[in-house]
Image 1 (cartoon, one colour):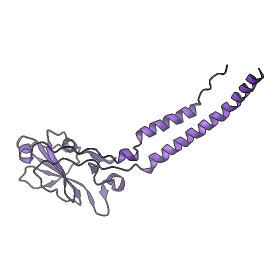
Image 2 (cartoon, one colour; image 1 turned 135 degrees about the horizontal axis):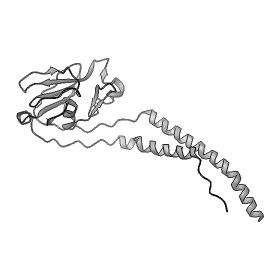
Image 3 (cartoon, helix red, strand yellow; image 1 turned 90 degrees about the horizontal axis):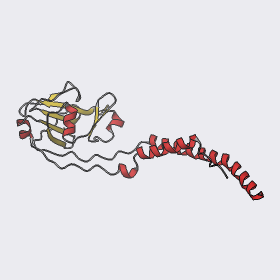
Image 4 (cartoon, helix red, strand yellow; image 1 turned 180 degrees about the horizontal axis):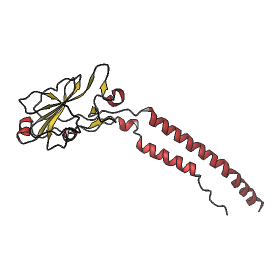
Length: 217
């Protein structure tokens, strides 16, 4: 009776890594499926600020991207997330993308386009009647006060447009997976294949010998 040959540790590790990378690396089909856009809801600017809320406007060069009311936000980043805007920051804490826009700004510009001088500018208004004031603090270090307005604008220190009606953030755009995860996955697959080939070579000899002994018996 033959004893089952155990799979070598290298092969088991390789297979586990392949499975982990396949589960963690986004495929082209998943990356091309954007998140559904939320339905616009909530009060307008006058109702929001009159009841102690914080009105938030996010503005792109071509048009306003989102607007809504945040309730008692902990900081500027929390105010953005309350109106449905996803924030992405660099390792230094600089917001480089809002709701995935501008596309690939984090990887291309690290939040600041040196050629055009564009970045996500952060602005405040003490009241609807006041003018915009450029923020002296980052989004995580500033706490908006009740009845005030927060503004974000991608540009070379350009003030946001004014908007009084709520506007839902668009769906997140698809981001292409970089070459590194793909190369890592292929490398792990190659390692696993080599380990499997070595295992088969090592077990082929004993199995053949056992089969020969069995025929002689």
